[in-house]
Image 1 (tube, rainbow, N blue to C red):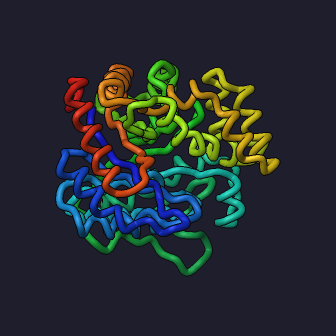
Image 2 (image 1 turned 135 degrees about the vertical axis):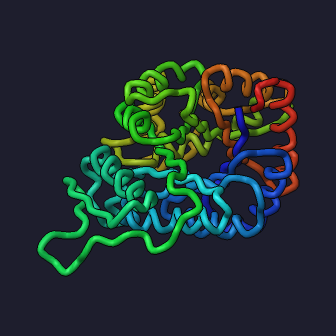
Length: 347
């Protein structure tokens, strides 16, 4: 199992000043990739391009670029550019986001996300392969548009790799099946090792050979003596997803928690969150749910958790830091690397 680092995106305080130090330390420790997300704050490509110029070997991944924010051709151009400038280190992670962001922020309809994703990836791969002018006739995308002045074009640069790895951020069973059918890897959140057989079942239903597929578990990691104290640092993170990501009718993370056996708690978290009772929402997040979907505690316990994830089939464990300052972040990365050695499951 490899290690990754997930920086998420810029927060209200524009806390990017520590990013280069953390990424360079992760690179020194042998972490395989740094992931950057986007929601409605900073965009992933800009941060990754900035980090590419300050690193030499670590992979650079988007977790994930929003499909509704860019045309497939624009995403392919961006991927080819970052991959070229970084010497072939880019990992293209894509995701549909959710109806609140897609319709409220990007102004496009959220309907039929699976079909749109399949067509989107088809076009991105066609652009990057560069075998000829790009044409496509689908339900959601048509290139070139019919009865207009547009003509079929091809990518005007030569990318370092014609087939760079594409990952899908997926939560629901059908989206997991799609990832197993068209992607090179899965970007996962709220991963419980004991629930992994269920996820693997849906991935393999898509036809993938899991021996060549990268399962990336993006997990909160807090190293400390008291598990309860570590858990409290992560609670608000879980609350935001269960309570605020999506609408009352459509919250993918709430549905995942329900499939994992926490349906009543997820409903309570969402009710409190939508009513503006944030303390009650945080309190309603079960300790067990947070612990099962995070890596918390002393280094020896962290090692046990890393071993459990590796045994469950996770191939890249991506560390989401919950830190007070960069010094603590560096120590956490070092502790995670030490724990991986103790666990004996590093690749």
